[in-house]
Amino acid sequence: MTSTAPAPQGGAHATRTALAWAHTARFFTTAAQLDQLPGHDLPEIAFVGRSNAGKSTAINTVAQQRQLAFASKTPGRTQHINLFAVGPREAPDALWADLPGYGYAAVERAAKLRWQKVMADYLALRRNLAGVVQMVDSRHGFTELDRQLLQWLAPRVANGEVKLLVILTKADKLNRKEAAASLRGAQEVLAELTTDHSDIGLTLFSALKRQGVEDVAQVLQDWCCAPEADVPATAPSPSEGEADAAASGQATADPA
Image (cartoon, rainbow, N blue to C red):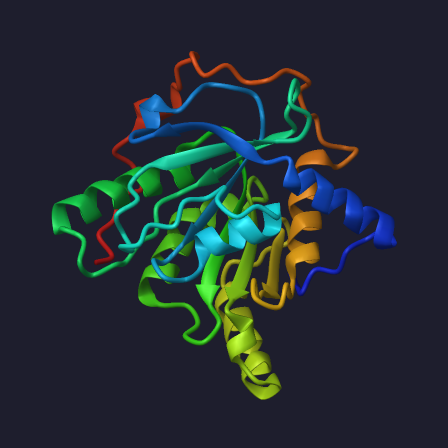
């Protein structure tokens, strides 16, 4: 089902707990290819978004850290998957995966195609992927590239295997009427993915005004630390190989 503007459950204490949990995020490892990612049993939450959609800023704001996610001065230059461990230091609850921004025109076409394939394979094949946070600029709505990314995710979202939260960034630049229109437009797009099994959330977000920060932190914690979830109590090992990429070659596309 699709929900708009997820509201924190459990009151102020739950909100503080979620923010404290998000604040534990710390760098774990980086990889240029899927087969360089470590094997582990923790749920992964992927952060994706078009270049200039405010992805790094949103990650840093939710984590209440200034430089957790690196924002390149030249959009599109960051071409690695960066993993961050979240939760107790000796036994993390989850990993956050910061994927490269997509759609920046100045990036060489060959690099675009390579990263489109890496991202498509990660989203379609990564065994540990539990949820995806997609950043969409609230002023522009879903672009063609944003919709392409949703197509890569659609099968796993539809069957409930992967949860989805769409964050409409830079909401401070909208007035009330524009914000409502942005939400309606996003709901129409997400309705195409909604099934009885899907878990899709949508919220306005402003790093400047901290709008939506508490909601997002609690949603992410709920995805990884819900009582019914089977969350392993062992930390991942960077030396373990990742077998998921063996099936690469599927789910590739050229939205450019």
